[in-house]
Image (cartoon, rainbow, N blue to C red; front, side, top):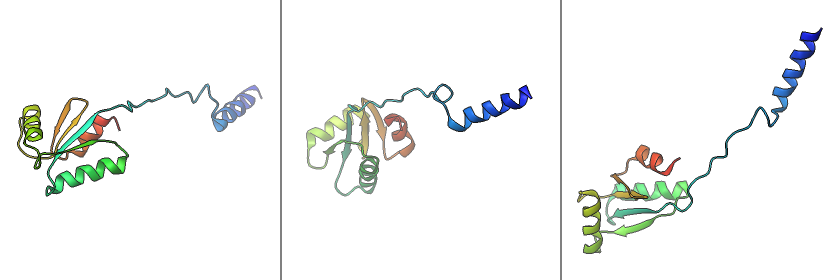
Length: 108
């Protein structure tokens, strides 16, 4: 009889998911993450990367390297690459539209 009552109480606890059993650490995201994406207007991968960030609701600064030699030199200095897109997430450089690397850098 005691074991029956014990199992009944455990099932009630699990059924109602009480806070002491369901405690989960609060996950916070860095909302002040600085993201820059170096692009050109005709690059399809640049467009895909920007659409992906927009879909995720991530704010970023778009740097058009076709229209600014200074921005192009900045991109090359940071990445060592002349191709676009180059995405910078808080100082971490991602070459090309690498969704997995981007998600990891964003913490999503």
